[in-house]
Image (tube, rainbow, N blue to C red; front, side, top):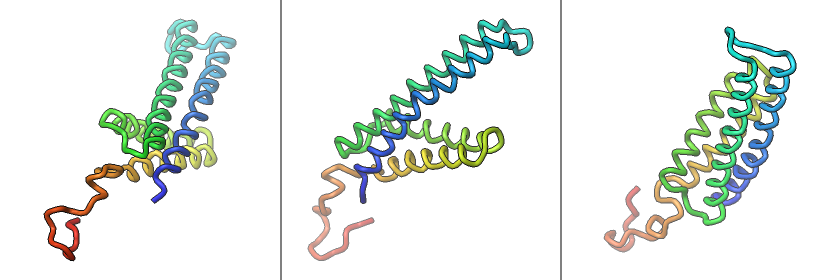
Length: 151
């Protein structure tokens, strides 16, 4: 299986998505500031600050997920427990945002979010339990010769 290229492509896509999310939130913050928008009486300046913070934090988390996938691809080993949890969280967020983008933006954005979701899940599955470890690749020492390895 082509684990390494999948992880590297996933990392590349997430690295490209990170600044795009920050830029999208920058545009939204600019609109909120220019129109002095408020939500239920909240201060518009707080809305602008919140939009910027959301964009920067989202971009940093995407870059962190991309780094985890990049390290997995370079080392050709599965990510650690925290890295897998981070990638699973990223996959869940992409799935939820994909469902929301269908109605708000359109099918093109949904397709992009689904492709990214698929890449993340494929990376996680490719580096499944025991993948990339010498113990998983070696034959079972306890099994007699000619016997099939346990599944």
